[in-house]
Length: 537
Image (cartoon, helix red, strand yellow):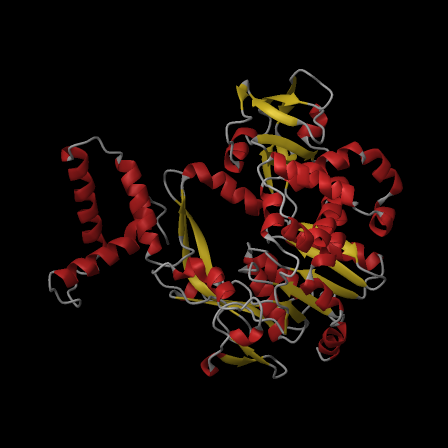
């Protein structure tokens, strides 16, 4: 059993120090004392004590220890991490599916917290907050115009259920700051971002992470689409960073029949060697499935994609996934902080390790940048696979290991309509602010007409785009005619999608946004191949 103390977190670093010291002194690495963690622990304790007693200046020894913990974990792998007590709540809330807070979706626009929408039925809606309200005070303290960060907003607005927070709000048409008392409550976080029918047969589900509630949300989404006549599915895992392994296994099990392997793990200790297989009759085992992935799809996303690919169950479309196949175990430490220590590796059913190579030289963190510079985002031919990493799916299709999941259908990144100018308009929030204001001013008319009418008939005019250009100039982004011409039609689609998002949430946003996605459009053309896989399953 692990002892949940700070000393448990330090052991790997002390081993490293012991070996390094032995080499420097010319000692044999077979010396039985070289790998004794208790000797290393004693040495570390002595050094901290001497610094505390004798160093010429006052020293925050707790800070030194925190830095030492982080330093030793860097020597292990990229995903073994130490999370201080003060950061643990936010970190856990990203996976637990809910957190305590006031329930708003917000943007930071010109150093001001702007309410995009209060969550339906949440504390802020109950208190009377409205879209486009600007929060300028929290508990009497000014928060506007001083460079507040997203993390600081979370710290200010989140808090225990039942606690109160006083908000000073500027509202359009009101000259004075209005005061609202919001009583914090449990706020659900949804990981299934969008569910809709693309056409009479094809359903679409966008999953943004694998949290505590993901599988439940996914099953509901599948039931909703089935009731609308879904016969084919696009499962979008692009930019999904992963999360809980068991939720990913449960999702994959809905597509895979019999007792087929989904994923297995292999660690130094046999207790961390596991096999996860299909166990139940799934709700979509025979129908065509296409999974969308890209370089932002990691961990649990790769478990799903790898399992469906190796079992010849789904067609994988997009670009090579991130390559995060290390399993972390959370270990609570005595002061309320947490160590997440890598204990094993994920392997797909064919035997491929999902984890891409890593070393201590920092290259791992720049891997995606290197892929871009080497041309991998634009041509599959730029990716070289070693024959030693050659594997086969259950039906004999060739797949390769070496990190990440390589899709069956490679789709290059489309940058033809992108420009630095359009990027700047987004970064200075000109686009977000304009679409938020426009949606709020026209909300009643848009809601009355409904999304279907908006999707089919609404056009973003040149006059609307010129207003965004003016807002960009006010925010320090001068007009760039060449960039504007290059990105004009793409910008038009983004604006339409963002207005829809402000009215109908993500189920309004993604049907429009996906018109710009080459991966999504390619998937729609590949259902014959997906159907062939399904028929042979």
